[in-house]
Image (cartoon, rainbow, N blue to C red):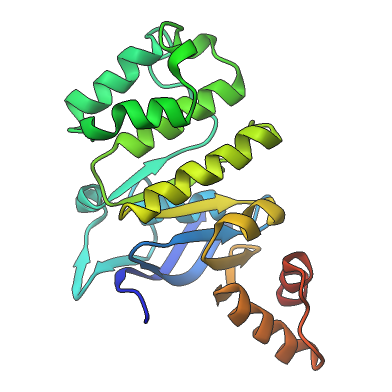
Length: 242
């Protein structure tokens, strides 16, 4: 049974002067899935997430929830975006940052203990956010995201800065959140990470959409393009389509 479409993105384009970062990208976000936005560095993944979430203004581009198109400022009721490589409130403690999410943003208090445990944050609670290592800061950002009240969470490079064990543990945490009704959109440049965790994929190359679908659908598209039996490895499928 096909899952419900929560949001439809269409015509998403972003230019920086003469440079076009993304061009006419469209895709759907479906209820209860992990959607991977996949592509090499410079493919436009971050720009696409930022424009979809409304952090940046597209020129042009639209996001519709059902039959209703939204302005970018109203998307925050449904979409919560987590950028990569930032240290929010660097002089405040991890505990303060998580409590601020609960208070100011109306976060999920019922998930607080579970998220802190799953991301192993208890030893970090008294540390200043700005004093954390890259991997520790990433875990805190992910915790803040998972405490957000919005049903759809967009996360830029969730596995960046994490070691192998932490990445595998995070996969379990994200999958548990989806099983409980959350929808996740993850931008990932590591193909192996994406293949393990994502239900469907949006493939980008040089700012343009090259394919969208499940692994099986992408395999069939790669087979059609190459004219022979479909590749089994996701890396080979990606290379065939891009």
